[in-house]
Length: 94
Image 1 (tube, helix red, strand yellow):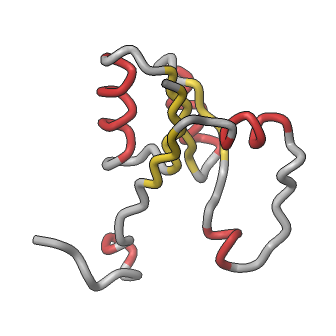
Image 2 (tube, rainbow, N blue to C red; image 1 turned 180 degrees about the vertical axis):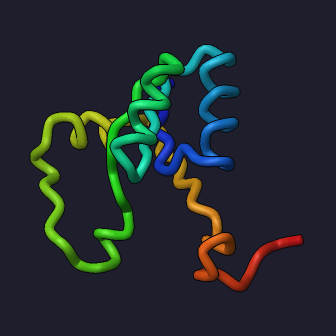
């Protein structure tokens, strides 16, 4: 199965690694260019994508071949936890 993981941080990265171990074709995303480089250095298929731009109503070029390929998947996992470390979130499941 072709799976894209939107948000390969502390939550999404372990999901992606498990899915790869199970034999799935996995792509991941990170907000920063540096984060993408780190994931690629680990052998992951990673792209840069900041979902916050969708909320800010900023233009996103969905014609971009890499981005189109990312969203052309059988399953899209969105793993964006609350940003408690930045003081931006207040609700979590304990």
